[in-house]
Amino acid sequence: MKWISVIGKTVGYFCLGIGVLSLVAFFLFSRFLSRFDLHFSELVAIYQSAKELSVPQQNGRWNVLLLGVDTVEGKSQDFPLTDTILFLSLHLDTGEIDAFSIPRDLWIVEYKTKINALYSYGNQKDPLKPFVYLEQFFDEKLDLRIHHVFVVDIRLVEEIIDAFGGVYVQVPRSFVDELYPRSGVDVAVETNPSVLYETVSFVQGVEHMNGERAVTYMRSRHSKDVVEGTDEARSYRQRLVLIGLKERMIEKFRLLDLDVLVNLYQLYLHRFESELSREEILALLIHLRRAHPSGFIDFKSHDLSAYFVNPPLRKYNQWVYEVKDPSFQELRLSVQDFLDVKE
View 1 (cartoon, rainbow, N blue to C red):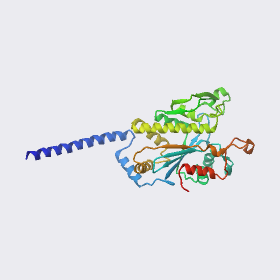
View 2 (cartoon, one colour; view 1 turned 90 degrees about the vertical axis):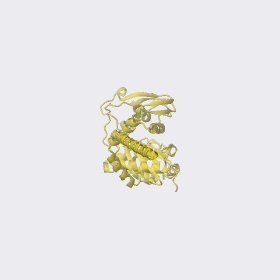
View 3 (tube, one colour; view 1 turned 135 degrees about the vertical axis):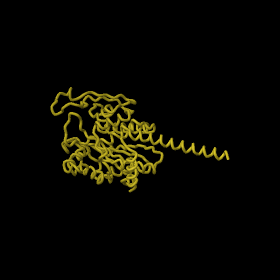
View 4 (cartoon, rainbow, N blue to C red; view 1 turned 180 degrees about the vertical axis):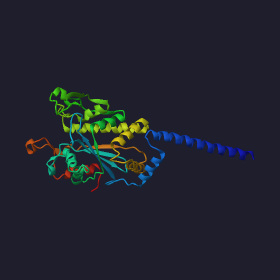
């Protein structure tokens, strides 16, 4: 019966080994969670709540509006204008993110102002519903529901890019901007142009940019170059940085860079938790994991510049954009086609 004893010992050692490995794994996982200031029981509770949540969607898409406000150090504004209006749509079945931007100088006839003032208008009308006018614009003009809105300032963009160790950007054209606003200058007091502005330049080719440099590349708008001095070029540069950030994210996530994950989580707690809970994020990830097991997320952007035109200055006494088709039908159809929405 010696073989029975051998089998018994083998099974015993195996069970003991499994037990030890389980304890070690639990210890390591607990240490991993501690980097995020989480406890195992807390994570389980978040997961249980997330399983009960449904992801808001329209035509199988989760739509987010990203507003970049032009609050900079030295420039005081209670209700800032939106420097960037970026629509992001996550396809919940394919994991693809589609994006397009609306020019900040688009004239909104109903409110007799540019679209970049609608966030400020909403804030003044009802601070609890500051996005109501922008949500109405996307709903009524483009037939798009906005599920979440995030307000991003310059400092946050820098922090996100730096959290990933910077981004690589393919600069398509060299240019110089001699009127780039300096940070930390009180524009309400200072009038000397040499103090208010600095010269920045970019050279054609691939450049590794930290957060501050990438933001400068995206915000520059006063180049004398006939191409790079336009708002269209500015919007295009923003898309280039987003593409670089997407590629950097994929690289870091594939490597499971713990420091990056911790930095992003802390950034989320500080900046976004009030807008999007941990349970909502996990519910979104659970849905994506089921529908798209590979975990790869693609990114596409759509250029809408062909649908806008500059009217004569005398029409509104200021430089603005208008849609070529006042009914917005052409613009709406272009967006719907890009998002592959069936009428």
